Image 1 (tube, rainbow, N blue to C red):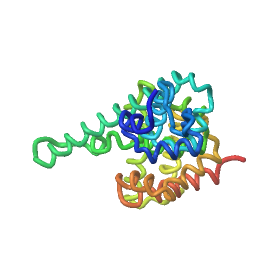
Image 2: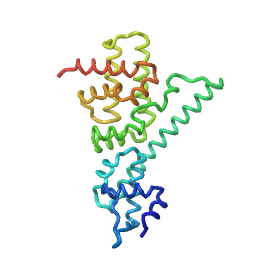
Image 3: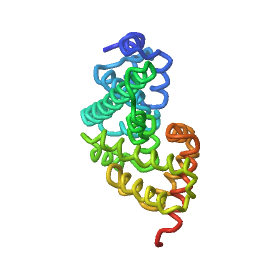
Image 4: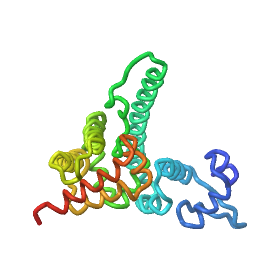
Length: 246
């Protein structure tokens, strides 16, 4: 059993934070007769799970929802978190490799293709967006998406990057949004989402397109392919969705 200061020292969490977790019912330890909080081994194991979820970007409200199961049933959460972290490590390894190659190119030691420059820049691979996607589409849907992508991370990134690169080139070439070349890319993007993500409806695809502009992080990420690519992609998707059979 551990008093609150010892629990804080062991976990690296402040006493104030532990008080807050107790207040909102996220981590409620036993109380001694004089009101002191006493943390058990099981409490600290639950705290570990909470901290992993926080690192992964989950809100405290969502963590509380995820931990509604029995206090002792933490193994599924640990397995899920390991899967998330493994994917994040793979993504970071890819970005580190891309950055190293870019530095070498800047030093004149190698040349990079446009595809190589953007390897790893794929919104599906960015963990920052995972919680937002969970909130919109549900945990089960996103778990299915992660399972579909398992072991195919490079393939997933290449599929999305190719579409964004092509649309950026079409934008530079002055092609109108309604051009067949762009509408073909919208179809490929939807197919990629359905293949590597989830069974996306046309309505949801339209919302995703709007998100490319309204979400600042999405917009910044996609505009790495060329200034204005996010808005252009959003407009291409909107036209595609509007002209599909009802």
